[in-house]
Image 1 (cartoon, rainbow, N blue to C red):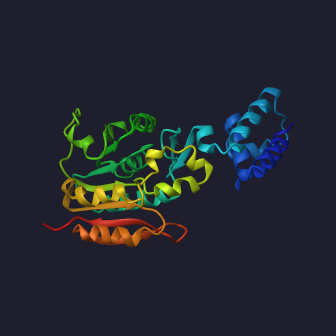
Image 2 (image 1 turned 90 degrees about the vertical axis):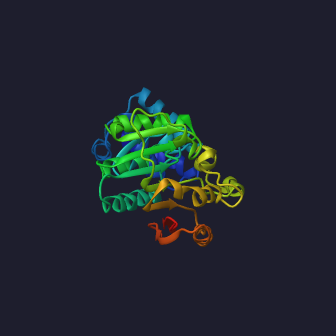
Image 3 (image 1 turned 135 degrees about the vertical axis):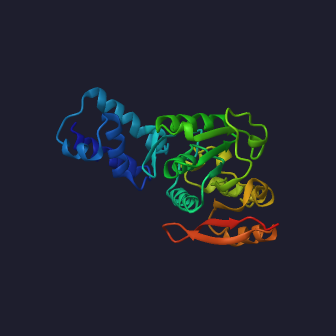
Length: 292
């Protein structure tokens, strides 16, 4: 079997399993197996696979056809040109979160040093690492309730030589900061707080794609009955961790913008902006802390 034939067979199998990106996924799986960049895979389409390679490719296809996420199979994903290790212990970063990261970097760059930012619920570390690389002078603190997620985030920081720019703290919400005993003193207040919190209403999780429903960690998805549990906590408590002229940027789910704006206004926050994602849906809330 040649590379071309293997890709065609893989595309057919994945399409039959209901995967919209069947051709691309087959190519990426085979490229991962052969350790070949996408372009080189195309240039070598006439080459034959060994029997062992063909058997391994078949097993990879079976996993993907069972709706295991491509990123979990390969172990990697890309986020703002950062190659990140991912497992089922962390949420696979979405393109929407890249927009959140870019906006956060832009806001942080406008502020005078010294700079500090908090990533509330870091998961794979994608936001914290993007901030550390985008604003190298900033001190970044990343917290998460999952020790397994923090293990992945630390490994990603080490792989990109950004570990010296970051504090990773374990704990539920602000508890991580209150109980921290880091080698270096932490900021008492931050210039920026950024978060992609759980925002899927509990009852809707079962309606998500199998890749998300069955493989992403429930802790990173479940936002409570209306999806707003974490936002309520942030609206009522985050101001004490933010500088008076600081800012908070939050990713949220479809249709949640009106309720979130009401929630933060009720708690004294100023609505700075609501930004849209690439599909035109409202996705990022930017708020200023209550004035004392």
